[in-house]
Length: 146
Image (cartoon, rainbow, N blue to C red):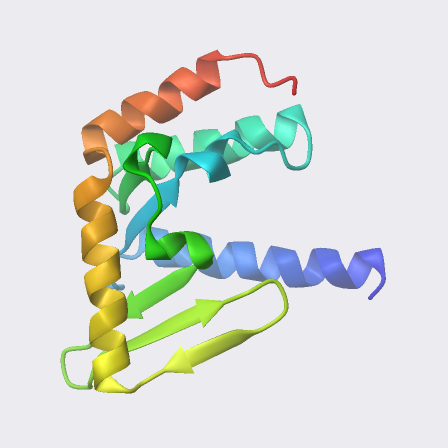
């Protein structure tokens, strides 16, 4: 894809995400973000700062629950890649996992339950939402040079 096409796709995705976070009728969002994700420099200093400011803002404005999973928590199943657990009021739960090149929707109840348990264990090992916000604020205060 050319750069203009990429920017259009990214812009559309950001617009949808922004609308989701601002709509009180939309799904409840709860993120567990590994410390490595917050410390890995991607896109340069300004991009890192903007990303961390966005995370802090979402947390401060109670648009989502955000927890940081610290290095001290050790290995968890969530480290294999991003996963989402989706629960619905009138439909069975589902999960979505992804790698760098593909994603997979999982609807098998036993597998979804296993993924949900892994997610619950990661939430239990993560910092509280308040401590997580403090952690992100400390990262923002640091110098972003690698």
